[in-house]
Length: 96
Image (cartoon, rainbow, N blue to C red; front, side, top):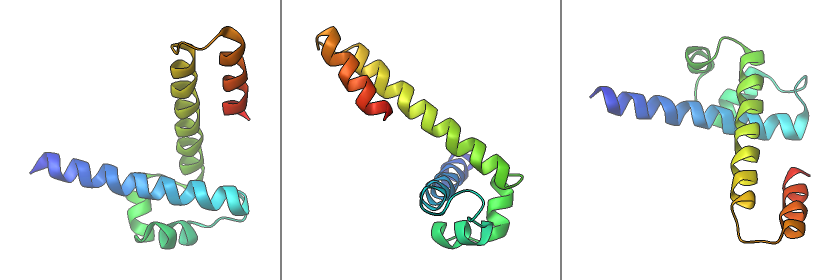
């Protein structure tokens, strides 16, 4: 039973992060409210506070997730069979 709850919690946290990412990209950090994030994630504001202390912690998690995705893609490019020039081009395109 504990594993199911953990997966549900991770899923809810993921939905909150996805909603926050979308809204922050569209409206900017200052113009995005916790109420909007909760509505977009289809959850309650209290659920957000279960997973995050405040809006700043959500932003930090969004940024961390972005950096992890960039690093993952860079590793995939680096380990590919592309030429060094192609790797550099793909890495730059990914970053932009």
